[in-house]
View (cartoon, rainbow, N blue to C red):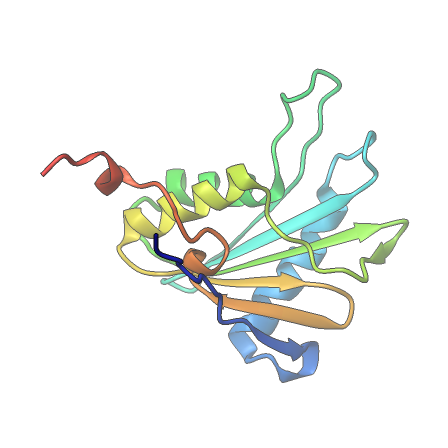
Length: 161
């Protein structure tokens, strides 16, 4: 029997320690929380992606009374970026949440479905996406989805050779 130890390298910093590109994508995600439609959870999530061409795309969670017909902020932003800029890699993804009018004290982490979509976005572009998970005071920075989804599934997983 073998044991496999899996770990993640996470850089933790404050908002003032971010680079300009990181600040811009975090601010865009924060602004996107205001376009969230969350009448059931009251958990307003905003996401923003910075494309390789400098364009920032935002998304917010959109809930629906007929669960699970809603969509998370991350997938809203990633799918829009993929449909409008299919050949432009995503450099950064910031995720942040607002509840009761305030940015949450805990980081906003993507659900399993969103992690898989991030994985596919990286695979599609052939490069990792810097992921910034934000709270009101700090940001957790991952250099790619492997830190959040170590045994990810891509089309390479289906190859038999």
